Image (cartoon, rainbow, N blue to C red; front, side, top):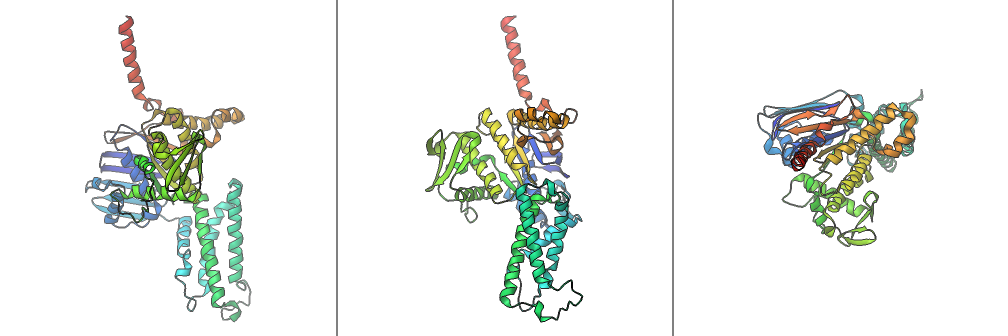
Length: 457
């Protein structure tokens, strides 16, 4: 379980949050929803957070998300996960890792992922790589216990990894189990070409294993990368030139925007065409132009409806992360409903839930939309209905596809206002509290009824 406590950070006076697979933040504008979401992005980015030891380094990362000015000597932040406990207090940082044999083995594999850059044939014996296989054994044990839960593709990948590991191990340690094993036996040594070939095989095995275990092993859920999808994403639909050689561009944008633009740019050139079936749209990047096709009609994206312009960059970022086999991603999406008619809001949140909450992925959303919240409530209710009446599965599936079902205990929702957070999950009915979904509609309805009473009284 992950928890986040925040005090005196920008608009946030005091916040106490339990982070789950799906996290929803609602509230008025400028209430601090995005501030909390950005902290979630930072603190769930394992590759960074495991390295940060200095207060100044943490502040640099806040600058990436354009919130560094919120950090003061009165700021208190505590993030607690099964990997580490990180505390910011009185201008100091404490980063305390937790003992976890699975995490330790996962981290250890990285030192073997770039062997070809570090080994020296003259001074290195292949026996020093024996720990690779011990780490793979440790990581494989939980997978073996739940093989029947793997998808066919995951099972095939796991089988390939284990077979390859066995082959390489036997190739290196042919005589290891023999009573006559002798390290001085020249038959156990290789010429330089054979040595380099084995090192390359270990390197490839390690890289593939890191990706597989990060995506499939629930014990590694906290080992996530963060992908932040900003509300300003429409900007990237208006840009046609390749200005987002973003990684090297010196643009007056927050780094998080440049990073997002880099992902979108890579997505554009990684596929000839994308088919957004859920909104009846096709997209391609052709001859330096963003082109969409709707109802058989082709036009430039910059001339399309604003709702389509906000969906395309979001869609490209999600598809690219999944295409590159990075399913252990914490997606943070600001206001997915931007410029969208309610029907398309429903279709978009269905797509997001189906894509971003599988495997070890997680999702954080900031929203003002009652339609988004109501859809998520329906997804929770779909799972509730199946748990209560599994014999009615076909009827439930006709109403809500299982692709969208969300178990209640996988979801958190908070109302943020006046610098404070309020948990709005209702444990009695296992859903998001209805009073916060669209409380303004009740106020508007009351005004209408009062005026009606005046007219007809």
